[in-house]
Length: 140
Image (cartoon, rainbow, N blue to C red; front, side, top):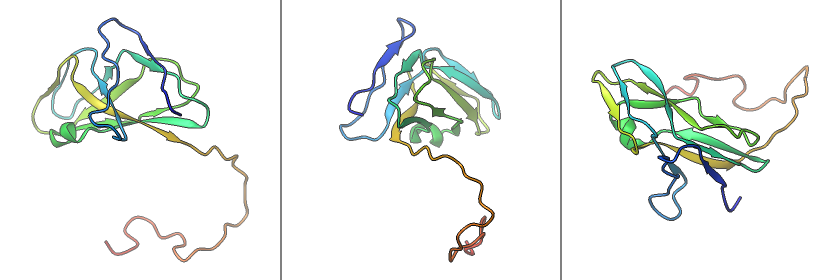
């Protein structure tokens, strides 16, 4: 996918940008200011919709500068067929109130190829050296 069609849903919308050529993520900007008390969550508008090609997915991810402040994104899978507004679910994990100003970068959008295999029920799964070892099974 070489180009990403982006539609402004509001005249105040800031289109996604990359800080540096080759950066993986496109910065998403807040359309409106939001305030979050400690432990609170909100849905922040970006004012954009995108047209992802089939075979691609958009992943809404944290910005490290906001994560440093204790702000965490949640959810964030944009399917290729979705044409509605991209919104960002934010949680304030810090003990301090946090504020995002309108026009501030609040998350990044990663556009990635995605496999869409059909699930097929299997009575047994092929054995591996790891097996069913999960959470903490490597001793760390």
